[in-house]
Length: 291
Image 1 (cartoon, rainbow, N blue to C red):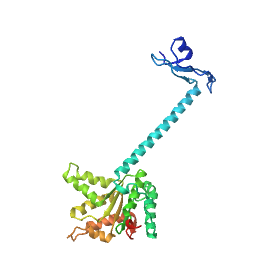
Image 2: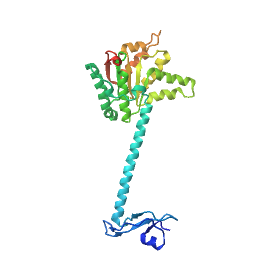
Image 3: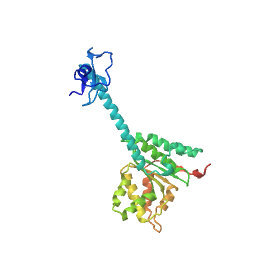
């Protein structure tokens, strides 16, 4: 039995109705044909509602096709937006930014001196320009090198930068050098291969290394760090670094104790500086103690 019937057919068949169709007449806006109301006839049940039938003329059918296409476009855009939002959340969750820095923005850094304002503006400009030089095949991909005394806001600013880039769909990994080395060392006692973890840091589009030079340098440590930095430098991937010391002191700190060969330490610093769009000094009082 046809589940959609006119009121007249419903009455003829003796199907019970709990309602009746509206009295007003309707015609097709294109061909002028009168359009009947049809009742929804559930098997074994009474008719509870009527709907206005659609016209089958060419113009009406074309209008309905257009409406369906527009609905499809809306649904596709909605799905894309939901997918993008899910991707953004995944990027942020995987970025490695932790604790109080997860919600850091550039506004979180209250620059009061000219030096602080200059540092903040340089990093904000880097974020604004990022998509331009990232998508320009002629532009050499370069990162940033922030160095300064303890507590000057270096971690806060690069956390804000990381959050900003991930919100724009850029995959970043934020990690201290010590933690990165720790994750690589963990593979020595697990089924995860050391190379797979190294490759994660070698290949991520943007690697943000915090607190370079804070960890104890050994032959393995310096060689591993060189392997990662050299790979990223050779492949034109962006590395952003913070350190509590200038380049000369870092060379000393990255040279294993008792070693007279500082070649790899020199090479690490040379590549980091060479791969930096800007070197940003941040030497002022402890920012965390202000106020």
